[in-house]
Length: 169
Length: 202
Image 1 (cartoon, chains in turn purple, brown):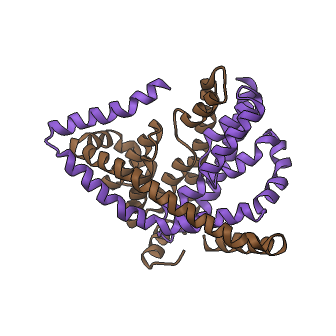
Image 2 (image 1 turned 60 degrees about the vertical axis):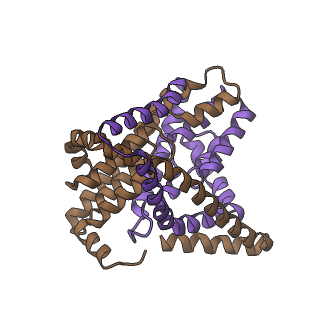
Image 3 (image 1 turned 180 degrees about the horizontal axis):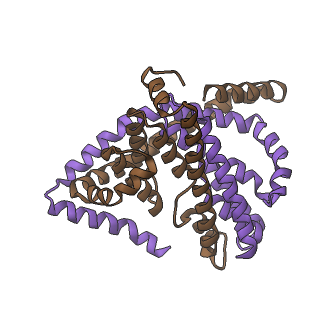
């Protein structure tokens, strides 16, 4: 943990020193970077909005709870404890939602319990698939079903493996 | 994407209508508000990282790094577009180091650069690598376990690393396999590139 907190400032310092040796103007770099950020955000915002409205509807309508109830037995069959299946299902849609679920699971079951460790591994080994797809492919008009299906399947396999590994490690 | 959006939207609408119709509009507004808040926080994150990337480009370090890994990256993404590969390599390194917020702006630009050349395979590969989590250290999970009073918060490091390696590998292999079959059937990247140029709707 400590090492990681040193990493970022050290990285910045190292890069800035080398950039200064190459006579790069740092102030101009940062103003140009900030200028680049605005069109980037504008280009992804419509897709971000549509995706987040949909995922809010998905969870508030009770649709996600229905799907969770439906999939929990299947998950259990694959070795994923029923307690963490909501976390596994929320993670692709919402980073903040899954973070909240993880801290809840950790406080309810204990951070060092099997459930707690499984939840932490499931959280750490999967990603917010729909957010990344909305942002990366913003406005490209590309068909996304195949890459999203591949990613969801791969992440699911990762979680199954993680739950198995938590039993032995 | 339109089909998925419509299906989920209609299903949610029906459910709201039969269970609690009052919740419908607030839910949509809450989603839009989340998007607005997220966009603003991303704007601040991108300001920092895009400034840093400018300095990194100026220092010549990113070009040096990408020149070294370029043969490998070229094979992985089936591309010889130097600028796009440099962005993609930067994205993958930022992911591995777990720099919060840094991979996304690079990933967006790399995807756009790949798709502009009609290389849907590279865009898919980059997306799958990103969305199967490439992080070496699960910092958020470790920090949350620390606050929850774990005796050894970092002992999930190895299981997480192994399972995320497995998911990333599976994803990459699946992209490679499905793309190969498509190419043999004659529905390869060329056609997708053409569709893109014609500006097909989503």
